Length: 219
Image (cartoon, rainbow, N blue to C red; front, side, top):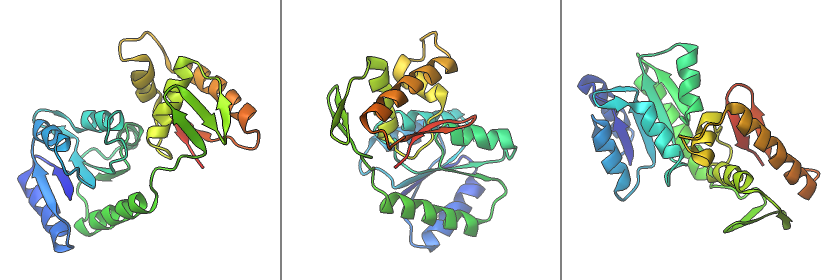
């Protein structure tokens, strides 16, 4: 099932028709509150398509919430009238898997939906050699002596491997939204975490830096 969050009835009808014609089941919400309620219910959708400007809030707020919750691996496509590079970068930085500017081709949207679903189905969450048992973590069988903050960073990255996690998202998840910390704080702790991972597995460097975006865990 695909969940569609779009407040414009004409666009919602066009997207739903294009997807249903290709055999997809579509549920439509026009409000953020509706979408949040549906995402808490079972079964969970396989993919979310969301607009940014909604009557009761900002679609990217929902995207950010998802990346810090139990549906962190849910594929998300953003539909937006905002087509500037900075808007696309922000959407991807906050956890969207794809960004499609309006007006768009329904056929292109369907193709992107299929590609994201294939990727999600073909690549279940990899462990990347990590074993986590409460506060005890090992890499390739070698125990890691991590601080609380290093453990928090690694755990958050492991929730969605190969996804780019922005520094702001990492700050919110590990330090808390009220903490007086900066991007430099994240960079410093990532550096010490990297050093410990290299010590345990010298041939590996699983944390990848994405300049201007954030960090991800890679095979």
